[in-house]
Length: 466
Image (cartoon, one colour):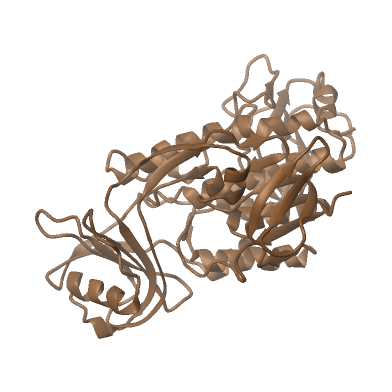
């Protein structure tokens, strides 16, 4: 007997995203969190355009937009004087096919928005549940905790961060390297005497690596402070020490830092779990891959993990799909995570710059066993690719696809009425897609494409859709 179908360990962005996706599918799930509250810091503050598309589908886009803002332009300082502004990345203008730009919003606010949406859908978070061990058998998983009774689930998802207790419990290794040997400080502070129009950057002096930045966080009175130290430094996280770092590296005085709200230290590293699935246990987010913060890929890749896994768990648990479908989670997501880790590391080391690759719009699964391209002459949009937005005879594609269903686009050709769980949109040839039949997966990627419906029914039967 299971207490729930899916137990999600960790109430960060990964766990909350997965909880929302399962809740809207009617899949019984419970999120458990070691701490008594949500994470309090701004750490993962950048949302990429692809993540904005996910949040559109999950019903939190308006709240995220209201709680965040555009990336500020950088302003370089030296000796108390402004040297001039520069863009940290080329500005991205929305298009019909990719309608959202990136957004900056503190992680604590993103998590509150996701929590509120989860609770709106009837989902729950159990705080104060520190996992100590995981055991599993052919029927399910049992999670053991430092306090309180164990919980039984059909599947368990580790979304409990880079030091994942679940990952250790199932014996999965993590292979990685230090991206930067120098320790870093990240903190949320309030500062007087500094305008909020710029991302203020204080580069090191000659021969030193001790930079400092102060980034205004939209919709708050806060700045995110990031500072790097020499190799043997033990980073002091006390408020007085944070104030002294600001005073030593900027034209500001220590007393200009009026509040230190949160502080943490870290050494940038890149690491990838050896497996993303061990029996009935799945690793997602930082439990599966740890990034340098450069390029803003960690939180975004984590949200994509949850979005990929959610519909597959739903198909197995509620639609009767073969459990082997769940093998495609590791197949698809581990390769993407490896690529994003490499990109983050190159950006951190100055070997690459932010640009199109960091937007995550070009990521896809063309080589996946779930991707079936059956057209005689495929166009530029193929099975495995992200399904671009656009309009078909007045209907917006993202509107048609929004929700936990599959969507069949019949463009410039006819199609039979699809089975339950598949929404049909008929229209004329589209400038991006061309003509043909395009089956959009619940996570917004093309699963099957064809010139005729031949083979479509057999493809859908793999997912329990009749």
